[in-house]
Length: 493
Ligand SMILES: Cc1ncc(COP(=O)(O)O)c(C=O)c1O
Image (tube, rainbow, N blue to C red; front, side, top):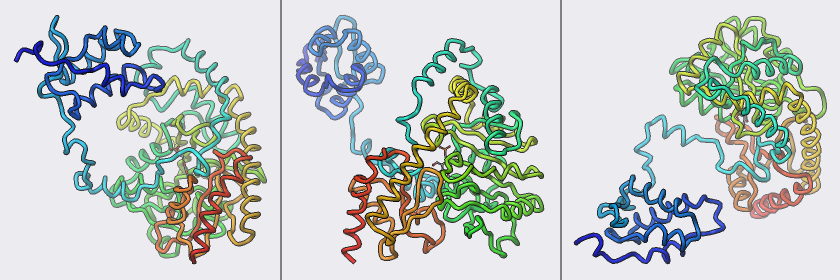
C-alpha cells in the first residue's frame, strides 16, 4: 500500500490529551516523549500518517519549528519516515516497547563487583527534607553573589578554561584553598600540594587506585563513613573495621601487628559518632603510620561547624613525615551538587594524582572552580560559614530540646556539639533499620546507625538525624512525626 493511502492518525487529539501546557518540560521534549511513547507502545500504529507540522503546531499552540525538529529527531531514530511532499509516517518497524525492553536489568547481568557495590550501597535516594543527614541549608546560599561572580568569570572565559583541564585544578582556587586551610585549619601546605576533584568520593577513588593494590587492607573507623567503605571495597581493597574509643580510632593489638596500606579517619568530628580524636591518639597513629609506611587519609568534611569551641586543627598539621592525605569538600559548607572537593597531598604524590585525575575522569569545571576561587578570595566563603554556624547551632539546640521534651532521657542524644547531624539512640527492642523505614513512610528521612557499621551485631542502635535542611520552626512538627513512629513501635512491644 502507498503511504499516502493509509489512514491518518487522529493525532492532534492523541497529543492534545497528553500535552500539558503547565509542564516544566520544554515543548520539544514533551512532544518528542509523547510521540515516541505513542509509537513504542503501539497507540500510534505503523504506517499511520502524522499531521503536517503546521497543523500540529497550531493545534498545540507551539512553534512550527519545534514540531519540525521533533519529527526530524524521530526520523533519525527510526520511529517515523518522511518523504519530501509525502508527509511523515510511523515507520513499519518502529522500535516497540517490548517486554524485554521494560524488564529491569537482572542482577545476574552485573559483574560480581557491581552486584556487591549495590548490595551494600549506602547512598539514599532522597536527599532533601527533614532529617536527611549531611545536607546543608542550601536555601541560604548567597545566590546573588555567586551569580555576579559567575557572570564576571564567564565574561573573561578563555578557551583554555573551556577545554579539558589539566594540572590538578584552577590555580586561583588552589591558592585560595591553601590560604584558607593555613589560616583556619592548621593545615601545612602550599597551593601546589592541592588537587581539586569533583567530590570526596572521587578523591577516595584516586587514593584507592594510586596507593593500594587489590587485596591490600584499609582500616576504617567503625561505625564510619559508608561512602569510603564502598569506594575502597569496590576497588578490591580489604576494609577492616577499627573500633572507636573515647580518644578516637583505636586499633586492637592484633590489628597493630598487621599494618594496613591505608587508614581512613575523621579525627576532627568522627562520622557519625562526633567523637574527637585526642592529641595523644593523633600522635600515636602518626608515629605508627610513619614507622610502617601507612597512608593516613584524614576526612575533614564538616569541621567548620563547631558550636562550643574553635574548630580543632587538622591532623595533617602535626604530620612531619608526609604520611597524611587531607580531604576537604565544599559539599557541607556550600552545597553538595557543586561537586567540588580537594586533596592536600604530600608533595611527591601531587603529580601522580593530577595525572591520574585526567586519565581516569578528565579534568574540567574550570570556570566553576574560578568562580569559587573568587568567592573564597573575596571573603564570601568565610562570611557564609560564619552565618551558617549560627543557623545550625540554633537548629541543633531546637532539635535537642524537642527530643528532650518528647522523650526525656529515654532516647539519648549524642554526637558532639558540631556538624550537621546528631545521633538519636533507640532502645534495643527497636530495630533501627525497621524504624527508619517506618519513618520514611511517614515522610521523615533518617539513617539507621547500624548501616554505618561493618560489625554484626552493630555496636550502635539508633538514627542519624540531620538538621541542615530543616528550618528552626519546622523542627518540632517534623520531629513530632518521627516521635509518633517511635511511640507506635514502642507501644507494640
Ligand atoms: C564523612 C563524609 N565525608 C565526606 C563527605 C562529602 O562527600 P562529597 O565531597 O563527595 O560530597 C560526606 C558526605 O556526606 C561525608 O558524610
